[in-house]
Length: 157
Image 1 (cartoon, rainbow, N blue to C red):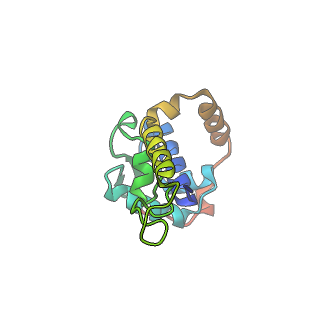
Image 2: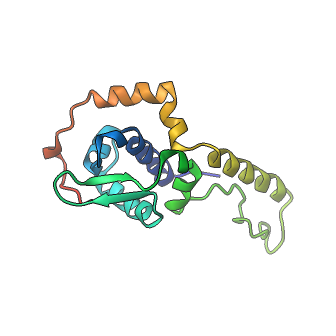
């Protein structure tokens, strides 16, 4: 199982959005600056997150993104799945054709690991992450860095 940058960035951006939800709509430029993620990459991710209902957007001055539902109702596994990532550790994608057209010797081991990872990430929601002391400490540090939106390409909501 390999969680790619796409899944990691999606979770990071969604957590940033959850942390700042009380401030109104959050622009992708702000998330990009705080998290060091390319604005164009965030635009691609948020298009997928919006299609799955995990975020909603508003246009115009003061526009940006909000969570599509409560942070307590968004599990980490939902975010990863929304950007077409998988937590499947099997070599065959669960098709049981790992060794030619047959199941490999360790298929059940990797399948069980995939299930455990899925259950673990399904049991953690954004609200739980927001409440973690270390997450708050990092967020507070990131908020101290001034965001100059003139450095960013204007973003669409």
